[in-house]
Length: 534
Image 1 (cartoon, helix red, strand yellow):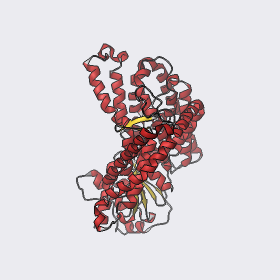
Image 2 (tube, rainbow, N blue to C red; image 1 turned 135 degrees about the vertical axis):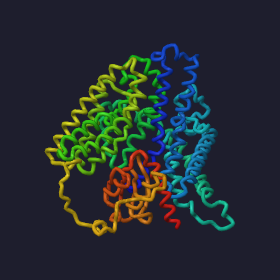
Image 3 (tube, rainbow, N blue to C red; image 1 turned 90 degrees about the vertical axis):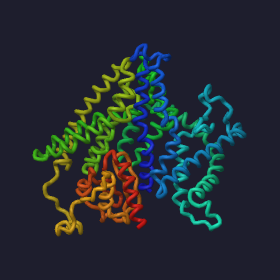
Image 4 (cartoon, one colour; image 1 turned 180 degrees about the vertical axis):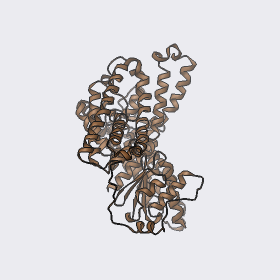
């Protein structure tokens, strides 16, 4: 069950990857349309303003069509076969579901307490929304994820269903869409009945989280980090950052919608946007890695320090700049789990301290995100708050350094550069083959496609296509569940094959690939299909 939940969480990351660039472009457009920064050049009647308004309209695409992105993105990660057809099925069934809701509310909206004919422009409390031009209930990404999950289940179970010859035209995608049509009609009636009640509950939940203040921020920030190894952190941050758990539209979209307004206000950011405190968990990505990297370097054996430096500097830079923390987290997570607990705890404390000093906004990722969506557009009126934030962050760089250094030395943790020179272990068949010269380091025939070459070697190291049960990915890791874990090569094999390392938990394997992992996964799955078809 945990494996299925992890796979589902990883699939949710597919559309999320698109938000970073779009958010930066929206924020930049806001900067260049801000008269406090650009002066008269940013007047609404200037060509400059109009050009940046055009840029902003394109950048808003992924946020305004978020539901469709999740409907399309989940089948890419979860369908076991014919991914492209699964995407088409998911989109058609989701649109059908919303057309059903629209028609039901048109005739029976009053019975469900919904004023279907309310003007969406003048009234913000209708509970309705235009999705792909359809006036329907605002089920946000919750509805799209639920429908996508239903479609993936139908697709995996019935796509290959063999029908009688005279019904052959209804096989494959057509059959899945027919089943989806049948399922979503009663589901639409159920949604019309239940969802208005859920919306009332969400409103109460939003008020609860806002009133929880520092306690809520601490618990939330700690859970987002501590659950990373399980892949369940997606289910914690998504309802807050992308869904309506704390503010309508989610923290990211709501913040971007009001960015210009906040930039021109001198009121405290905490007062303007209290929900933004729940995004401060991302500050750990900027300020923790330098301290942790320094602690690893300082505690390593003198003869190993250069190697440690080469390992942690790229990982720390990636975390700070891009907000991708997994390389440095997985450098120590499975070697010394206690450090990961401390890392998560200190990150939550840092978020609370920053919030207490008035910091709020969208700090869910690294330096690029923080600068583009916060510091640059709001600097004019809020530079004092950001100066305090950076001072607190630098203080935590030293806190991370000293706490990690003390724990590593006191507990004699085998972090990078501190491993024992001797390696006592039971030898495997693979070790014997290496000794006899029957197994060599991975040396693929170059195809001219680096991602394909990596995928081929990873597949080899994982025991071949016959040993693969399922594949998915997150930001930097290829997640694979194999049938026989003993067939999986050692960590060194995957490093020589172009990976950054291996995390193995029985038959659950994670190959740390880097930011190119979506491309490697696509080649990996194609190679599996080719092997299985021969």
